[in-house]
Length: 170
Image (tube, rainbow, N blue to C red):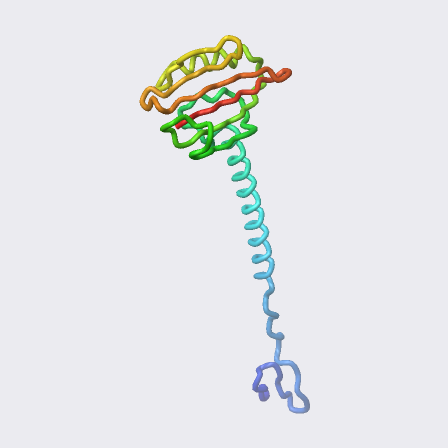
């Protein structure tokens, strides 16, 4: 049938070199599409994960999960944290205390249900309601298991909403 070239692509038919049959197949480039698809899916998963993480973090922050208040401190349902500060060993902290937590929340309810909530919740569980100042509506409280942990809650009318100022010494 004739001599085959060293590369196997040509055959001598006696007078000239002719192709030795089917040319070898071209290397498949299908892997490029698989790689591009995997990268696109990975990118979408990363973006979705980051969006979910951010959403969860913001919701937990707004619900008070990362506040300077203890986790069992009454948090008015639906209230959003709009301000927070923690000071250590500063002026205005009663003797023997080491820090003060100041938290400002906004609730979409009027002052009456907010006040009723804190009147009930600050006198249950580990919290003891010490007094209510009728003129300012200030609630003074302390923690039963740690009496030095004490503070105030002041709900103030803010248009249709209520601003809740919480100060906790510990």
